[in-house]
Amino acid sequence: MMDFSHMVLKPDHERRPLWIGQDYIILLEAFSPLYKVATDFLVAIAEPESRPTYIHEYRLTKYSLYAAASVGLTDKDIEQVLMRLCKNAEIPVTVLEFIKMHSSSYGKAKMVLKSNQFFIEAVDLPTISRLMSFDCIRQGVANRIREEKEAIEML
Image (cartoon, rainbow, N blue to C red; front, top):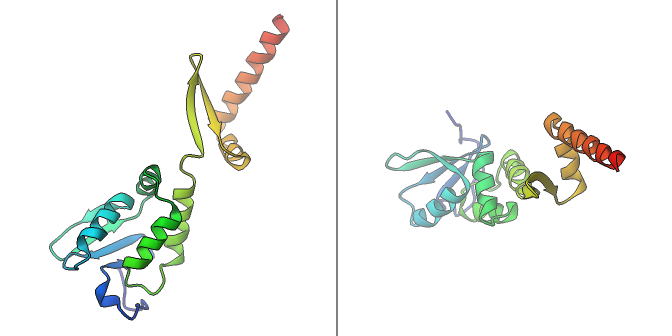
């Protein structure tokens, strides 16, 4: 059960529909005049957990944040809208870090098909380094280098 009793609220908190907990849970007051706007936004960034009559519960997940990034929402966009709609004086740091971590990695690498072969393209060196930390990718690169060496030696 979540404990919101120690949360510092904004002075006009009664006009805002969202409560944001440290465990990536967002509660939405269904009776708020901003309910429709908040619901549309939450559907884009979070997964619904439960939706009883008065309070709806959503959870931020890495997959929901990837989906948000895929429609063009950045971590800054998400943070700004959450700040506008939340009762909290501050969004928990854990939530902001989670949003940044999972929305900023979207789109940095992609798999492409060229000449009937799959390749992974990345936008920067840190992304390539991270990808190379996975055994299956590292082995694939090593196999590709070995194949190219053998092809050159045959010439």
